[in-house]
Amino acid sequence: MILFQVDSVEMPDIDEKKVASWLKNVASTYHRRVGELCYRFCNDEVILECNRQFLNHDYYTDIITFDYSEGRTISGDMLISLDTVRSNAEKLGIDYDRELLRVIVHGVLHLCGLHDKGPGEREEMELAEDKALSML
Image 1 (cartoon, rainbow, N blue to C red):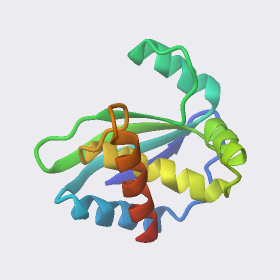
Image 2: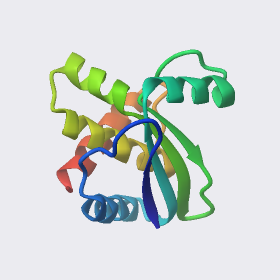
Image 3: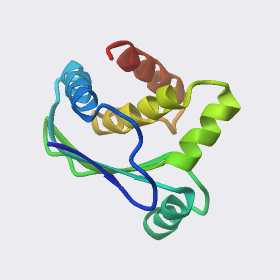
């Protein structure tokens, strides 16, 4: 089950059924199946507070992923700041909707075992995001 919720923002204009199907397909390419995923869209202040409270990070970010996966079944909560997604899209000169989809799939890729903090991991994650976006 994939849920999309909002906290202090309006629901973004996404085709929830299409996105859910896409995320399941992406997970299957990593030999994973989707359990329960909850996306909560919020603003910068909500994600900053969450970042401070749970990760001891004092900065804005586009997504925070909480992983509850077991075995080959991915489950988790993803908090996405639409403010940061919008500002990142503007900085990069790309479409907001495309950037939002990139961030949405980024959370699933984390749950599938990809990382983006170590040497070479960011590049690997970006390639995986591009591949996933091409599946949509």
